[in-house]
Image (cartoon, rainbow, N blue to C red; front, top):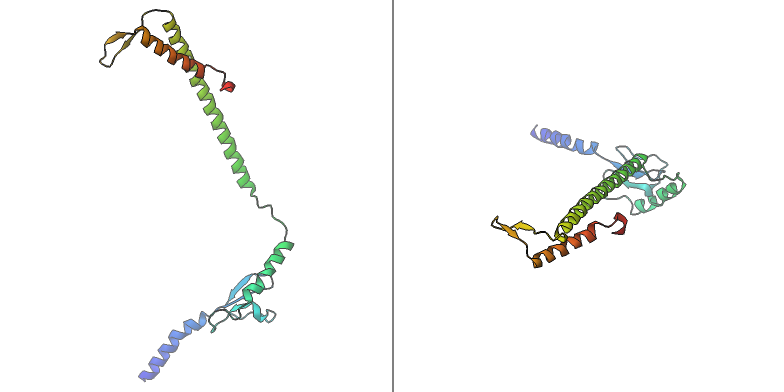
Length: 171
């Protein structure tokens, strides 16, 4: 009785393994087919890749024999452009946004340059007038500039004027 139970238990455990038996073959269209049933009779043996109870490929050439078929089919298939219209629209939109941002950045830089140019010209006019110019030192005390420091500051302002007061295209 115990032997019968062990045998039935062993068969019950083996039954799911048999139901998971899978066939794999390449059909006439060059596609891999997976099934729990055997392939149709018109499928040649070389196209059967796997069958239940056999480890590994049934024959060594099924994949190699099946590879040229999709290539032939692809040659006769209609050519696809490979472009997605929605993707192209998004790309154009992103490029337009990038161009708009670049233009806004250039306009902002032009405004900053014009403002720097105006300030530098006003400061240079003040230094050229000959009036005494005072600055605050590190201690917070008022200090008048001597001729040497005025010359250095004038030179710095001339450099700013040379770089920021040119037309936008001349830079």
